[in-house]
Image (cartoon, rainbow over the protein chains, first blue to last red):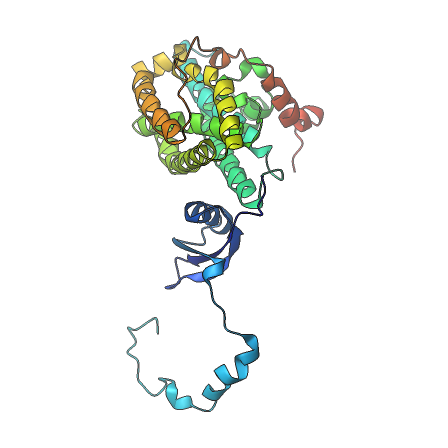
Length: 95
Length: 263
């Protein structure tokens, strides 16, 4: 059996503690069903998760590192964009 | 000497435990040799699940043996003694579980045929009058559900895959089918445990097993063998194929050569 024809998948796991899915890593699988099962076996063996997303790596479009300056630097001197001036009620745990 | 009633009970527990240990050991032979990393890990996980189930069952059997025979200190039975110091004729696993791995297809099919039985058996054993066994069944059922799901999908994937994978699965069905009948041929301790409400009803399991196996094989485009033929029996009573000796030789070597060795 060869893995050459099996596409690469990116795996996102939602942990018990976390609220969002976090990138856990990647793996090979023939289709989405197998990718989820493989993700279960590879990335949740130590009780890391309660929910799994997989997406074929080819569908992920990444920003270009060379454009980092124009993409991110302009936000440097605009602290008023941060909602730091609001008082958050104590009951609000996850902001 | 154990009275026959309690020896039926311990033999029944040992049968369940031996099935899990031997199949777990077989699966573990793939560790480091799986067709791809992800499946190597998947099968190793299944091996660990099965060996973990075997440990619970051995511990339970050992406790019963110690109580009924007043075994203490060095004479006490332990899970390790049961696993490492019994010879082939004391092992009660069914013949299916000890069959060689063959190719990936045969390993998958062996797991599938066993997992269907395993799942149905545990479903019933959850209501066993033996509370410890019921608890082990409840816990193991979640693992076994996954083994069944994983192996079913692979049977379908390979059976309905390329012509090579299809042919290999056909061969695997031919090789393994004759060992499936033993799962449903009740032996003395199974009948005794069913009568006492500790065991399962094998005929009910058989009916549901046939439906489930037929469903998956049909989806996998694999023809169902016409009949189960004359099943090969013996494993449950300690009469094994030559395969078991090789497994035990490897598995027990260290404890036999260095008794009591710990690591």
